[in-house]
Image 1 (spheres, rainbow, N blue to C red):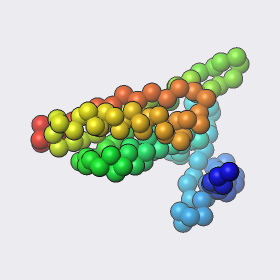
Image 2: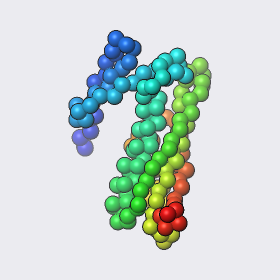
Image 3: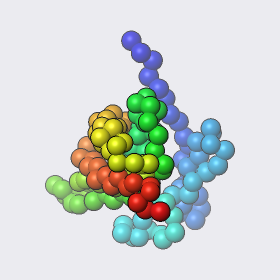
Length: 148
């Protein structure tokens, strides 16, 4: 049986009502607070935003993995992402996350390979596979020479 991977962090509530998240391997902390939508403070990362960010970041990392494995180069990737929270059976839950990657490639001939990598990245993204809500990918592939 394979050994499980363990990811650790420390979280603690500060006197100002902000939670400090610290992962030893990063060397820095993130301040997180309840979002204004739930009566919290503006100007901080919320756990909700961090979750949506984890889905987008994991997609990018997984895409980069598949690009290397499939031996193609791309000129850049950015992602916008949004998560929808609704009341379901009296509880606030994420009902969906949509990730909007924009991928820059050198020429049109790479499009089928990039689309294959997008599909594989979606299928194998650790964070997306761990969530109860569906995660959708709405990719936008741009040709660098056309954009310039």
